[in-house]
Image (cartoon, rainbow, N blue to C red; front, side, top):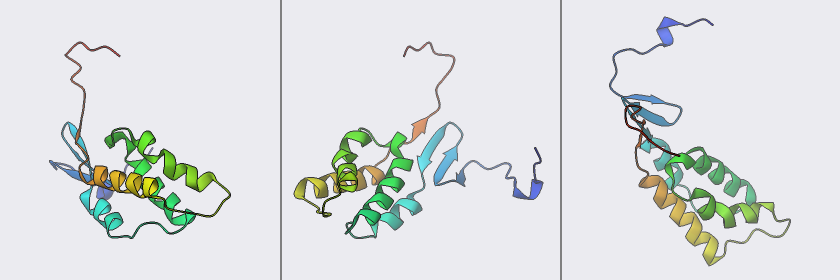
Length: 117
């Protein structure tokens, strides 16, 4: 494997990479990426919904109960019927958007402390 020094970054406290901000022992969502999605209107078709779900799913480790929140939105994309945003689906969409803006920082585990799974 080759490493190109001109592409490497050293001595930074924070680093933006792949839509995340890594700093020491934490990993957070790049708020600029989230802001771009928040500017878009509610999806009007399956393609737009799948695009939104793909974006949100990328950050699913930051979003509590993502699978439960997104279930009705994934279901509408699987159905061969007409795309329809019901109140339940709009509510789920808004909850995911809100969760993206309030996503917590993830901490690296402290391997010196005993833990159980």
